[in-house]
Image 1 (cartoon, rainbow, N blue to C red):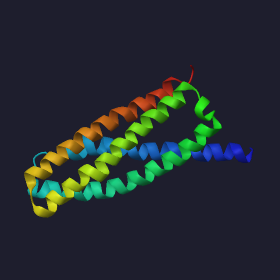
Image 2 (image 1 turned 45 degrees about the horizontal axis):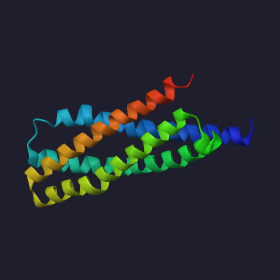
Image 3 (image 1 turned 90 degrees about the horizontal axis):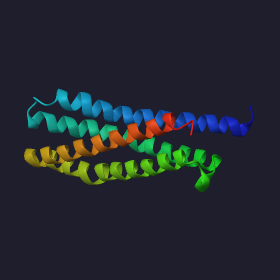
Image 4 (image 1 turned 45 degrees about the vertical axis):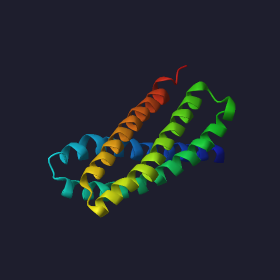
Length: 155
């Protein structure tokens, strides 16, 4: 096995593991955590959501960095700007997902944090609803990207 082949395998593993962390985390947040907290009072729910997303966003930041590095390396190995359309599409969707993540992390999450600190529960609830919608959009985009990766291999 050549050093380049090993590097490609390591990059692919890092890429896929990071995607699993990101998409799996969104599945957990949207389909498990959110419904489980539906009947909890805002005074308890919002601080918990703030604490969970504080940790979640650290993991996703690391995953996004790993996806960028590994994806950039893999794309360079498979043609760069002339890469097959599947790779270009995955990269484009990934960039959109990263932009949505950036907005959620650096614009919406601080609103949640400020609302919790000031105990402004209605403001926090609105920000959490915005976060829910952003997570759902990214979750759909994540599954579309996975579908492209798997289903378009034969094209």
